[in-house]
Image (cartoon, rainbow, N blue to C red):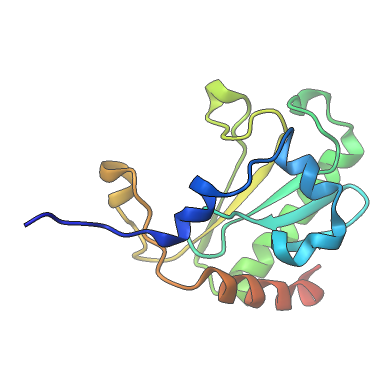
Length: 163
């Protein structure tokens, strides 16, 4: 008997419409689609968006509107704003979402592990005691234990309080 693992939610990724150009710039330039893009927050410098393929429930990113792959050339004002959003995000994830810890990271360049190397972005990954999951390491598979849309709505509802 053959074991089969079904992942129908990946169908959109595999067979869906492919964008020309930078996906983050597309999101940045189409504010009218914020709900469908799962935008949590948008301001003059950045937007905050749920990661469509998260490491853990509640994983989101802070992304500058400015298209650049060079953190070292990012204007200080934008970097400081991203840092302020990161502080607010950590508070939201810990106090509002119940995370026990948070991983914050940026993968700069393809060699640095960036999946979208042409546009810098900062990941915020909530962590929970006993959430260690080895399947990602050994099987290149992620286990997502809850509904993505429910998590988006929960975090979105917390934005006014923490941002």
